[in-house]
Figure 1 (spheres, rainbow, N blue to C red):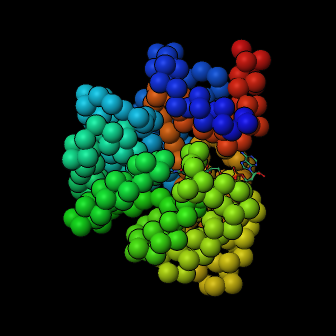
Figure 2: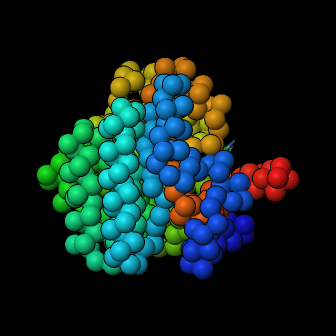
Length: 300
Ligand code: FAD
């Protein structure tokens, strides 16, 4: 019930635009690294000092105006320049709908190509985040086109999709982030039951660890993390073949612990003023995250 409510709120265009005007509110500042590049680089430096690398996401999605998509592209290129100039350990995560996928496929592809080409100049990886099922195939098509020219690009496999196993086999030679999946998807496309999703998640992680190029295991679920620790040990998978990823601000102690245990760890660092949809999806995943809101309201 609460999950559906927050997913519904995350897609509300009116609230989304209103949130952009008012800056980080409702506790979003606990899980969003900053509203501009300068603040974000500062947060990245702090994480790097603990041996944690970062993937930076310029917040924004469901863009329907070319000007907005072009501005997002320019902002992401500015982030790439800042990563290079500041010599921080970070790469890029981006969402195709922010770069015009709902406007025009070729326009979006060209925007992504400019970003990937610039990142390639500096040897910076670009991850194409995966959104809801309506955008899944065109996002893979963009990946196919870009990877025929560049090697610094990868994507995400969402374990709740029935097709995920086929996708992971097809893309085994890519650097892949594997997640459970964050959107509300219909039964025709995706597992609904948590147990089925978790089972498929483990199956996909194990497959990519054994056969894939590089695996980013993106989860806050300690049961999955403990399983992976045992699996890599039993199968002698070296540390440089995988990393754990978590979102900025979540399970900070566990993030630091995994890094100090010698695992590669990467924090997903979102920034910008288009924080509303991202924040609502985090509340949908885990209503206990409402604590962040409550703390904010009472700690004024
Ligand atoms: P859950 O299934 O939410 O939680 C499992 C258990 O873990 C909980 O029952 C609880 O015991 C424990 N737990 C979870 N969170 C906490 C917490 N904060 N504190 C204490 N215990 C906790 N989704 C997409 O669809 N596309 C993407 O591109 C994408 N990229 C992502 C990138 C990263 C780095 C991460 C971490 C997630 C990403 N996601 C993405 C979201 C993902 O699909 C899940 O929706 C999200 O991670 C929640 O699932 P979970 O695996 O973390 O664990």
